Every structure is written in structure tokens, then in C-alpha cells.
Image (tube, rainbow, N blue to C red; front, side, top):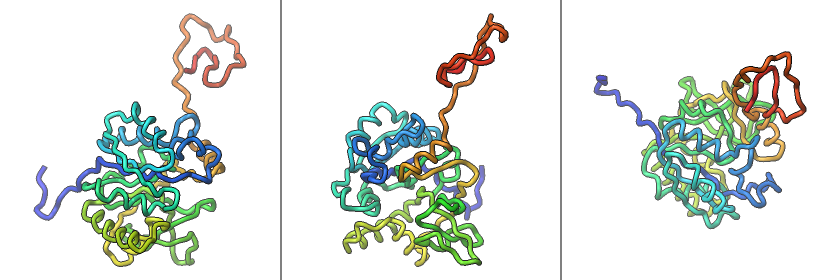
Length: 285
């Protein structure tokens, strides 16, 4: 393939950063003895879903910022990392700081383009496809039940501004941030400079979005929007969120295979749990 002298293909991202230091207090009692990322969503944890997605997309490295019950995360990933190299950064102040501090803790270990993901997200793996290249942000149209940071877009589909709430003027459309970002090396180094200033000013309880908001306003950070509306995703902060996520991500039933030699007329539907029921001559694993 021949490229024009002014055209350079973007480097595909193969490194991910997972912020998993928080206590997940809004999910108590589930997070009393297990970190938030190990919360089960219909029998499969948030972290296992993420690892499968990253392996599916060819990721080679995952850095996990840990804190609350970090040994649980380490033990879980010992046998489930697949082809991904796992590295850890422990945040000792996880009980008294917010995710801006967790992101700052990773400043010395990442020197390549990477994808930033928070540990309370479940999503269809195919949604990551367009996030595999630098300087992108995952967003979704606002829904009545969503809250938190929002963004507006310019005509080119890049973030025009970050906003602290979902309220919007009649002449604008706001989108919810999904809390997945992809950053180039140059953008990351500029982010680190801002993070250093916030941490030195003892603003350790902010969300890292305050840094992104300031940088977008100053035009020192440009993020292309990737829409997540066409496939399911959910941010799990509360028990109510967990119940909603389980509706979007039901237990997968195995494909049926024929019971050779048995006739449908002789089959009976037994009161066996649905995933092991015999029905219409097929057995579901």
C-alpha cells in the first residue's frame, strides 16, 4: 500500500489502562469482600467480560490501577489473562482519593497509545472496534436515567466541550460520556502535565474529566466521538444499575444439538432449570 507523503496511518492501540482502585461503596454489600470489577452480571464478572473483549481485539498489555481488595483482582487474573500481559499499579490512597489520582498513578508506566477504561462498565465487545485508534471518546445519546459528565460535539464530530451535568439548551444536543477514551502518546503527555498540576494543588478528589474539560476548552486535547448507541452497554454504580445491566446482558444459552434416535412425540418437557431443559427434541447445554 502506498501512502501520500502527508498521510500517516494511525497506530492501532494494543494497551489498555483499567482504573479499579475504588471501594464501590454504592454496590454494598456486594463489594464488601470483592472489588467492584468482580461483580457478577448474570454469572460473568465485569472484569472477565473486559478481558474477553480485549483478547478478542488483540490487546497485548493491560495495566490495572488497584486499591480496594487488590489481591482479589490479582488472583482472578492469574488464570484468565489469555494473551495479555498484566501489570499492576497500587494506589495506596484509594480510600481518600478519586479517579483523577488513579489516572495520575499510571503516569510513569505508560509510554504508548492506550485505551482508558473504568472498572464498572459492561458493553458489547464490538463497540471497541472504533476505539482502537488514538484520541477518541466513547459517547451515547442521553437517556432519562443517565447522569454525570456530558459533551457537545462540533460539526466534525469532535468534542466541543465537556459539561458537568445533563442539562442542555434547546439548541444543543448533549451526549453521555461512556468513560472509555483512547489517547495518543502526545495527548497523554499533555494530560500528565495537567494531572501533575491538579495533584500538586491537592485536587485529588476530582474526576479526571475536569482535566479533559479544561484541555478541550484550551484546545490542547482533541477527541473524536465514537457512538455507542447501536449496541448494549451499561455503567454499574448501584444495585439498580446491576439489575438493568442484567436485562441487557442475559445468560447465553448454548446452541441446541439433536438428540438422535428420539422422536419429538415421545419427548416431555421436564421441570428442569431452563439452561438444562429438554425441549422439542433438542438438548440445551
